[in-house]
Amino acid sequence: MPAIPSWLSTPLWDQFAALLPERPDVDPTHPLGCHRRRIPDRIVFDKLLQVLRFGCSYESIADTTCSAGTVRNRRDEWIKLGIFAELKTIVLDVYDRMVGLILDEISIDGCVTKAPGGGEVAGRSPVDRGKQGMKRSSMVDGHGIPLDRVLAGANRHDSPLLAPTLDKLADLGPLPDTITVHLDAGYDSAVTRATLAERGLLGEIARKGDKAPIQAGRRWHVERTNAWHNAFNRLQRCYERTERVIDAFFDLADAIITLRSLIRQAWSRYRWDTRPTRRP
Image (cartoon, rainbow, N blue to C red; front, top):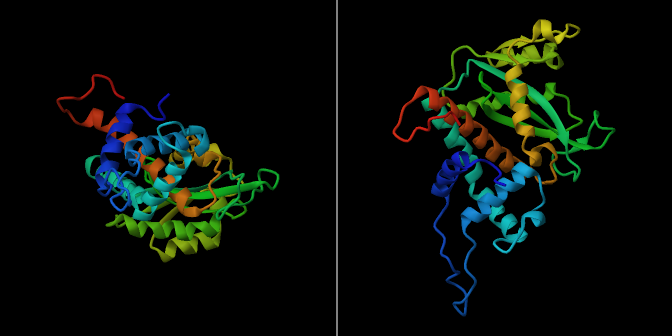
């Protein structure tokens, strides 16, 4: 069973492969010149997609084609080269050029997930009987395309994570003159309004005590993106302990979500010779 469909994994791999440095099939420094051949990058990439999508352990997906140690080592090698972050940036840039990011309307919200293994961004979860959990403060555009996130322990409140999340806007290049930030009632405080005012941002903040249907606003985009992220079981129940590895899996998931939305929207916006007859 594929982790993601071929119409999505193929273009994703093509771009990922273009970022990989050249590597010889065998180690030229081996004294006997007979070192085993390097496992193809495509096999390791597919294994990482399975880990991300199904949430299984590295040992569970290891087989005769690739060992668990190889998957971990190649993962760390690609993280050190910054390939996952670069992939996400490229896909986001392509989406912006072909469809367009809606940056004048952004939404931010926190989401608590499980982190049974603990780690650098884990803490006692107030909604899971004090078990280890992780919180992500996600920022999305007006259509729900993930822009960036800040990771923290589950015991952190949403409001203190707002400022570092908004600081990620600086990495997106030119921004609209007016940006409205949509927030839920957890951010309804003078500190939040001061944080937005310092950055010249407008805020549409739900008021505490009012029922959600009355003031639903445009926050549902970030709620939907949180659901998209939680569809990747490695992010919903995270066993990784180091922040850089978790960030790499999030970058890969963001690239998949953005590319999927790009392909689906491009189907109705553009025409090309090999365009499928049905929307993917």
